[in-house]
Length: 121
View (spheres, one colour):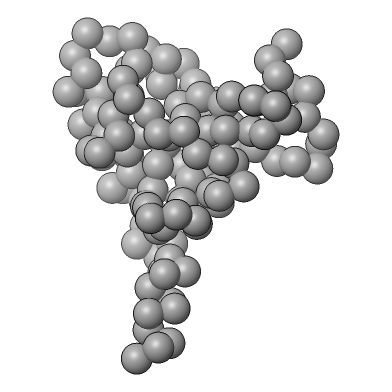
């Protein structure tokens, strides 16, 4: 059993293969794909990639409280993701991640930063 499986039920963690949006930090508003989940000292961290700045070989570690789930992963998302991580052609894998994130609708909504900037003008 993974450490994440022992979390309280009220603490929802995006599953592997889910698409999340950063809501805190300098990367606010950026979309990521969840590649893995790690629990350290009771804090749940997600390993995230976007195929550009953060590839599958160098995922970003971010607190799960600092993201919001945009789209849950499909049933085969975890196996697809593990196949993509283990593939020899990392460029093709990262291109597939970029394509997945690009296909999401633009109607996700503005990030908090853009809303704050617009209200100060």
